[in-house]
Amino acid sequence: MATVIGGICTSHVPIIGVAYDNGKQADPAWQPLFDGYKPVAAWLAHHKPDALVFIYNDHCSAFFFDLYPTFALGLGETFRVADEGSGVRALPPIRGDLELQIHIAESLVNQEFDLTVFQDRPLDHGCASPLPLLWPHEPDWPGTLVPIAINVLQYPLPTARRCFRLGQALRRAIESYPRDLKIVVVGTGGLSHQVHGERTGFNNTEWDMEFLHLFEHDPEALTRLTHADFVRRGGAESVEQIMWLTMRGAMGGSVRKIHQNYYLATTTAMTVVLYEDSEYFANSPANTERPVRAG
Amino acid sequence: MNTNPQLQGIESIPGTYIFDLRASHKALRLNRFLWRLSFPIDRARFLANESEAMQAAELDKTEQQLIQARDWLGLVRYGASFFALEKLARVLTTSNLEMYAAMRSETFDQFLKTRRVPDAR
Image (cartoon, rainbow over all chains, first blue to last red; front, side, top):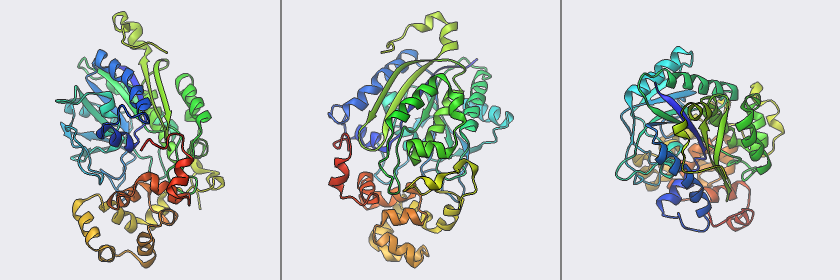
């Protein structure tokens, strides 16, 4: 049986990818960001999940508004990384596990999440900006990806509650997969930011901290918020944090936060958080050995 | 006009333009044009002759003027999706931070002064 062993939430700001490609890991302006991912990368290297289910949004790289899906799952043995206008990044194609993707698609649809399935479409910075900070990629990625895209661009967006329930259904999908795979669910986006209109540059660290607290201890409270609530508190584009709720829904009732890094440099509160699945680590004492401890 | 209960009260948030189905429908041609700038062939065409490319895409006068003027805020108000606008910015080698400054009607330096770590770019 496949198991959710943990969850990661991470920003997916495109400039993270640019800074990574330009080798800014030791640049004083960027080091606090890159260092913040190291414990997460070490945890992944230690626990070696077979696959990451990546909850992200497409930024008009795979889809355009002539047909923009609410929920879409990527099917394929490889996905190319999108050229978003600055050229092709020096990353190997992202690998996929076809049978796992098919099982998750079938299970979600049978649980009445009637998602779209896409093939032969690139993955953009929604996946590719944080991925190299989590997993090494030379000579190749150590595992596969199940990309699940959520519409956070064109209203009406799915509600926060719907995204949370998608995560709960995703957990059931994973747990009904017959092969013994270790899975980590990654929710991307946020935290506070706004990148359009005169309100561009808006941030709200106080709300970000409250969000992180509720996310860990009372995610249901966040599912009661409207999109307007997210826009008002965290800036227009922070509404994408509803994608974090999908990851949280997939984590079961209680989680254990073992690492968090919050870095607000220019316009987006760039954040990465690592959670262990309480059920998995409670049932397997041998699993509790970990490279990092809560700080 | 807003008829979506999830967006109730959105009008009271200043400087924010929700990209909903009304905006998407109104600005479909404009957004398609911007989006296609992520394809090398359309990028080359735009760089070779901007107005010809816009005419071929049947953009109306207002849309063409907004692009010619690099009026980022005007484009957003008109109905451009920020994520389609980013494709135009890449072709023009305009950074996102420069777009942000323009949307706030600030110079780039003024905008950077409002940021915690202006060197993170």
